[in-house]
Image (cartoon, rainbow, N blue to C red; front, side, top):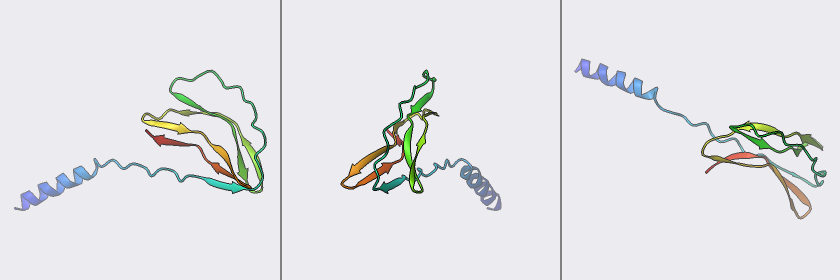
Length: 104
């Protein structure tokens, strides 16, 4: 019986090491301001990099003003699609949704 318990304990310990924990998705950044974002800055998109996805530059709200975040490459994620950051007008307010990878 003692041998059985020892074997069962070792098996459970071994199986616990096999558990794959998925990280929680990042929180969706939501920002609401009353001032419209400035006009987009036209960027030259560099030549395609295999295995990467171009995230276009965009305005973000920092404290009490807009700041430009230049475009950049991100590694593609198999089974996901990218939703670009965006500003949307809702009556007198501008709502920002951060870019995010969404599972297909």
